[in-house]
Amino acid sequence: MSASPHQLISMLFDGAGTAIRAAALHMREGQVAEKGKAISKALDIVNNGLLAALDREKGGELADRMASLYDYIARLLLNANLRNDPASLDEAGRLLADLGEAWNQIKPAAHQGAE
Image (cartoon, rainbow, N blue to C red; front, side, top):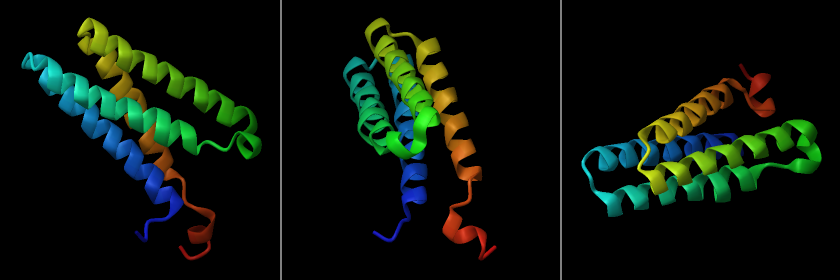
């Protein structure tokens, strides 16, 4: 309840990564229904969390590029689910992990002066 907006986005990246790792495990074990649920959770986080959090007015071109990247990640996840493709799932996971790591390197403006 007391998480900052920055922390909430970090939590979204973490949640998407967890869902993708679960999907990969279910894919390897042939658990189709569970794989689908995990990929659906990751898609929900990307589309209704990360993408929805973008402020396209303030973010300008960067926000537009992030939206395109989130769209690409969503297509990778859909492909992974439809074709049972671990490579697409891995790529989506790597991209989100890289973005999450970069996000965590950003210090919110309110905390920069305190550190």
